[in-house]
Amino acid sequence: MEEVGKKRKNAKVPKADKPKKAKTPYNIFVATRAPHVHPEAGENMMKLISAEWNGMDAAARQTYVDQAATAAAAATAAAAAAKA
Image (cartoon, rainbow, N blue to C red; front, top):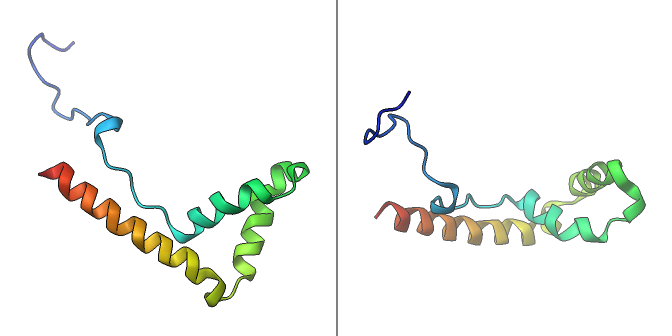
């Protein structure tokens, strides 16, 4: 049992206080494509989206890579601000 007034050795930081990790290009792609995939795809929705992602060339993916780079810069800045 924990004594009153003592802190836990490995106390976790509440989730609300942690800055979120940056999304990857694939995560951004999934977020934009998921609403447009046929609703009857059901369990196969992620398989369809994954196949579409794997079929894209580098030029088509570049939009998502750029968005991810912007998100990573923002996440790094947020993490630095949280530590300060």
